[in-house]
Structure formats: structure tokens, C-alpha cells
Length: 622
Ligand code: SF4
Image (cartoon, rainbow, N blue to C red):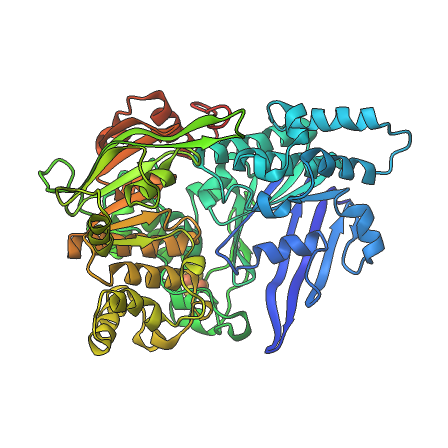
């Protein structure tokens, strides 16, 4: 008799579209035991979320499930909405990626928690008992001041607390299976670690089973027992989390692991960017669907799709045609990072320590806001006496958790906010008049976090990039020529000149945003979390592009990020902020090899993937 809590057999998910039936998930087999965590990993569009939605019965109307999903022995495929009411949010709960959009903005936290408890329809539930249970649930997920939080609305909470509230709501129905869909993607590294640890604790205490959906393979180390890597709707590798992370066999799993910089990685070479993108599910290539992107593809791979076979006695399964000899080479590829780097490109040059002309000098910059009503007015010191410089051809990174003042700092630096005190010098000249700022803005480019919202959706690629040129007075012909040069520089095919943002991938949109920022040959580019909304494989392409541009054009960059491995990889100088102040500033090597401030040490520990709890920072930024 099978004791699995959840068991999927021959599971396929199709979406009916105007162009035909789109296979999002194909022939999946997996099971989750009681108290076990299964992580599903892959790029956006690989079928992870479609699998989770099929398990919880939340597929959109055009979605169709084939095969079988059994939960505690009961078949879930074909259940009616009435049947689902007894399972969804009761036996199986879900935590979504963005708690701000998942929580109801017009209901207090208390109301949203109470709703789930009342839906359990237990007899003799008093109002006081429900309040007590809400308090206990918030305490259980590590929310401080639960009575205050119960009265607050989602917008009054920080990102970390909102995600804890989401988890409390999911647990209120006492589920047996929790589906966590990218639960930490929008969070800082310290908060991310706290949430993963919280889930690991809950799993242990409540014997909870978790289905974790993530695109970050390294993140699974803290929580997952088993990992399933998906590509183009199919599982390409499956095994114990430790085996997959330490000894991945499939080239795609390899590529995912090598695409993002890691804290424990001292390499100075280009990232191993995964070329191309996921195939269109309506036009899958013949043979192995990964072959157009695989460096090991051979003729057989192009003709026949490999079967999914067991490769050792630890349930490690693989779908790949590599022979033992190929695998021997692949193992070298796995363990020898130098080989990866040779395949991926040139050395990343850092220039800290050399004398460079300062481009931007910020001295004792302050930005205070008056908050509260007339009678209870308070001063919020968002930026409090900050000093830093950006030198010619160098990258200065500002790091810290959300709410530490990073964004207010750059916005005050460029004049979006009027500084309360302090000076900003650009090319040796203090910015004070409107004319000074106009000159400054003509020589600064900006790249924002979400390329989709920063590009005008009604403007084509050509129009978006040429807009700053036209503002700067370029003639139409010259501007068009420059746009072509820029498209070539950032690796966008010239045929995409007339394409619109919705017709491009996330990586292409961010390349267009970078081309627009470079249009008028800026001396300084300010990048605010430029890769945090992108998949790991696309992140690697954009990071490599930024490094190339820095080297080829001697560009100076102010890089705002909470991603410490990325900062360690890309920056020359690091400025660490906490509560509006700089707590540590030095060259990148110094900060990461010999951090002096406890907060810097904590940030570094939190960003180092490990299952240990050392260096965990408690709470949130005050
Ligand atoms: Fe690469 Fe071939 Fe293996 Fe597919 S089957 S991952 S193309 S080696």
C-alpha cells in the first residue's frame, strides 16, 4: 500500500489558446510523503506553477488536466467546485509569491485570519477563541506585537511580515500540504533566510508537507528533501536535494546552478549565461527540447527525446542522452569552475585600489521627511549624513535591506528629492541650481527594476531608445543610426526595431532599457535592482552585458541592490546602509573578506546558502 500524501501520475496540463492546445506540463510523475518537502525548480514557463495550480485545483478556465493526482488516496482530477471547497484552503493551502497582491488590501490582518478559521465550520467557536487563535497563529509564524498586527492593513506591514501573515493564513486551516509558490522572490536576503527557516521549523513541528516552487536552485538547500528540475513542461532531473545540488547531472541543472553568482564563489570570470530561451510549447523542437541551448547536444539529441531513467540507488533520475564518457567530461564541467569560465568568456576585471577620477561625490547628504498628523509630527531620517563616491569606470554598490534608505539616497542624489542638507558634486562641480541639475541629468542614464513598467508600452523599441536622443536635440536620421548602434551593442536583433515591449522576453526588455540609458553617452548609469525581477538565466546575460559595457565604454555605475552575491561579483566598492546611515564602506574585497560591522557580517551570512542558522538577523528594519 502506498503511503504518499500526494501522488501524481502521468500528469499533463494543457491550456486552450487561440493557436491550439498548449502543453504546459507533460507526463509528470511525482509523490510527496508526509512531512516531506519537494522543490520544483526551473525558469519561468517551465511548467512549475501550472503543476502547483493543478494540485490545488486553481487552473484558469482554459486549463485542462489529464492523468491522475491522488491526495490521501482520493483522486483530485475531475473534482467539482463543491468538492474543492472541502480540500482547497482546508487540506491543501497555498502561499503566493507576492503577499501584497495576495492579501486583501481593504481588510485588516485580523479579519483575513478570522475568515479562514470560520470557514473551518467548527462547532462552538466563540469570538474570543477565534481572536486567541489568530494571536497564536501570528506568534507561531514569528510576528511580533500580534495584537497590533491584527488591527493593521497589509500596506502598513513590511514585506517580511506580510509574507509571515500569508503563511499564518495558509496554516489557519491546519492543512496537510502547503504549496509555496516562489515565497521569497520579492524579499531581501535576510528576510528570505528567515522565511525559509520559518517554513523549515513549521514543517518539523507540524509534520507539514511542502511543495516549494522556485527558480533559484541554491535556495532549496535550506528546505527541500527532494528536487525536481523541470524544462519545457517535463522533468529533466529528479533526486535528493543534496545530490542535485552537489552532483547535478543534467546540463540544464548545471546551467541553472552556474548562472547566478554565489557568496562562496571566488571566481572572477564571466557568469555561465544560458543562451537562448525556453521553446514555444506549441512548437517544441524534436528530440530533447533542451538541445538548441545545450553545449553537449549531439545528433541523437536532435532526433529522439531521451527517456527518464534511474541513474543510481538514491532515486536520482535523469532525462539525457549523455554517455558515461560524456558524463565524465560533464563532471569536470561541474567541479572545475575554471572550465565553465573558459566556456563562458573572459575575465571580469575589477579596478579597486587604482587611482580614478571621481565622477560623483556625495558629502554628508541628508533627507528628512516630516510624518504623522499636525499634533503627532515626527521626523523620519531616511538618509542621514551619507558620504560616498563613484569613480571613473568603476561600479559603486549601495547595499542593505528594503527600507534602509537605498532608494531615497539615489533619488536625493539625482534631485528627485530636495536634500535636507549636504552636497552632491558631479564632475567636480557642486549641484545647486536648476541648470546644474539639467547638465547632470544629460549625463546620467537610469535602469530600473522592472523593464516592463519602465518602458512605455505604446512605444516601439526604436521610439523608446530614440526618445532621449530627440530630447537632447539629435536629428531624426542621426538618432536612428545611434539606435541601431545601441541595439547592436546590447545584443538586440535589428529586426526588433519596430517591436513593442509585450512582444519581447524579460531579458530583451531589460536590454532595451539599458540601451535607452546609454543613448546619450552618459558618464554615469544608476541601476536600481536591475536584475531582481528576472530569471536566473536571464540575470546572467544582463550581468555579463553590464560588465562588458563597463569595460568597453569605461562607464561608471551606481548599483543599488540587496543581492549580495551579485554585488560581490560585480562591484568595485561597496557602501552598506542601515536605517539611513552608512555602517561600512570599503573596496568590495575588503567588505566581503573582512567585514567589520556586525550588520555587514549578518547580511553576508544571510546571503550564503547553507542550512545552518548562524548569523541569522532577527526582526526587521525599525
Ligand atoms: Fe543536452 Fe542531449 Fe542531454 Fe538534451 S539529451 S540535455 S541535448 S546532452
